[in-house]
Image 1 (cartoon, rainbow, N blue to C red):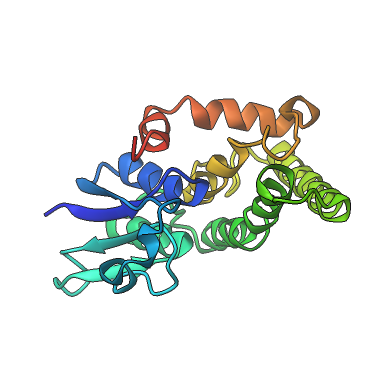
Image 2: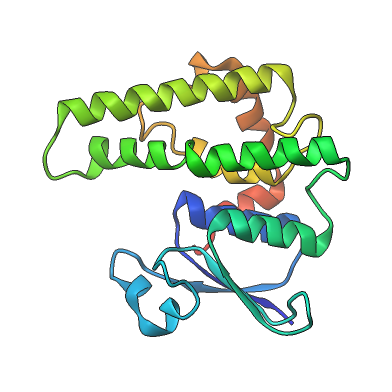
Length: 207
């Protein structure tokens, strides 16, 4: 039975579609147009009470019954555990992958999102906010670059759900005023991840 994915063309939404493509899972796409307020529809709120995408329903949950999930990080962990893919088996490496996933969820996502908002979408240009979030974004890229100088991928030697979570945000580097050439290790990683066929397909969802 196919997984039902509720998503839109945002970095967080693309995390889930990339994972589903990478793991070879069958899924149906339900576009949730956040510009038109689809995320507030009562039927969507039953699945995602925080009115955010992505969300999914797996008719074959852990106990054989349907399970509904929201929050992109939780979805990535769930899909990885469901398939046994893209999470290191070694305990130490597993926690390394999880810490970088949490880093993305808590910093390299929220802070970049604020940079997007104040640089591109705010009705009023607020110099303090633009400077604050652009500087923090650059700092986070520096953290990412240092890590990727030490390791090929975020979890270490193997591509994992931590990379799937981080790539869609880096794909909007121009939105937050970042030149990838300033971060050579990130640039190398970005090209490697972006060339994966499943990533290309996942980034095109919902189309």
